[in-house]
Image 1: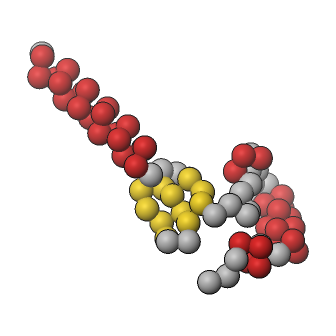
Image 2: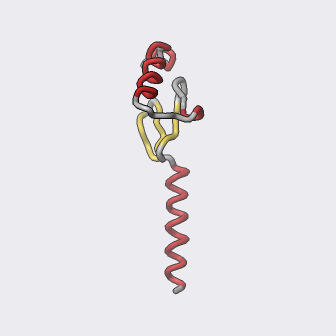
Length: 75
């Protein structure tokens, strides 16, 4: 398996940033995790194991669904 440092060559990082600028796409600094072993984005966790649902997001959805359902039962 490749290490993050090997995958993330500085010239590739510059290329990515240049493409983002050219296309007028902006990324907040807290999203620039080029060397991270795991990132959480759009309700998913991406790491060396693959992509999976973020359990915190799933729990939040389930709690919200239970709250809405219990309110509808009272009416």
